[in-house]
Image 1 (cartoon, rainbow, N blue to C red):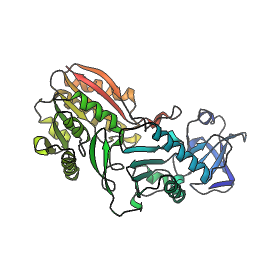
Image 2: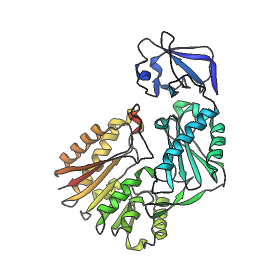
Image 3: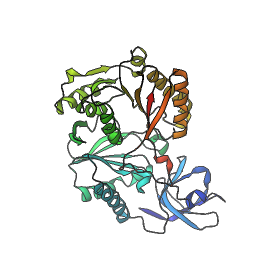
Image 4: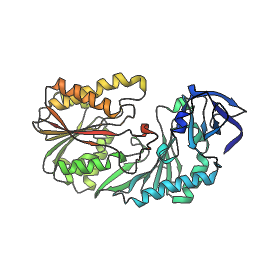
Length: 391
């Protein structure tokens, strides 16, 4: 797996981020390549003076030219990756997560840059976002089969950054049944998962804890679940006695949401399912809900779209605040790492000012335990949510 005939030398003074164990090295920090290497090779990284710093995947065509795996002189072979995967899996096993769907590998936080691995019962779904990780995909599949013996492995590599890495999107069954469809259980609720056709890897696993929290807050009340997808927030809330309205633009997602209600012994006819654009629906809505959930897709696909995305977040939150009942709750989320906590709060401040409502922050919510964030790589903290009280 390693290329021992070449190494990457950094420019003078550009080793500080590596010494701080940040796993990314940008192309502007590189002085040159010594020896011959192909994009995706595993190379050693040295300082301008030739001192060893780290080892990682090299891709000269990407802005992130190096994705680091190790800060030690060690052999990066199949045993190395087996150990990394086993360590990540063992950690999740010890946590007693109340779900049969969980994240087993969370990229850089688990020392495996460019790899996300989710388990849905007996199925594994992987996302690859780096050229180097894609190069060793055959070995990864063999190791995963050995460690977990899954019934099927599906790839859902469809991120916007694949082109820069020199990769194409790939949605395919790599091993196992041709059309995987499975059921999971989460906090006592059941969900049907479309592993090939669903969003992300099939379900928004990262909102598990927040769905449970919303269920407690809305027991016996009325919940408006916006961008509801397959009804995750709605099902948990309905099981707690809430009256729910789910707004989602995708008809297939709404059909699966209705199915999920039935799976849990809930009558979908006693709840509302609105297939519509959330922005348009909220604008014409009369205030009638004790709680609104805003869990939109990532408006920020890259840094170039940040300004436009901030306006979209501000618009949707302003409208939701205006349509909130007095003393109502609003859970508003962002799933983009480009939008940090400080900027998100500033957006909400502007939205509240424009709405003319008094708004309080009650709580900040984020990713669950199986989506850890490395202290050395804060970019891994992508999910941010504010629980607000609209007075």
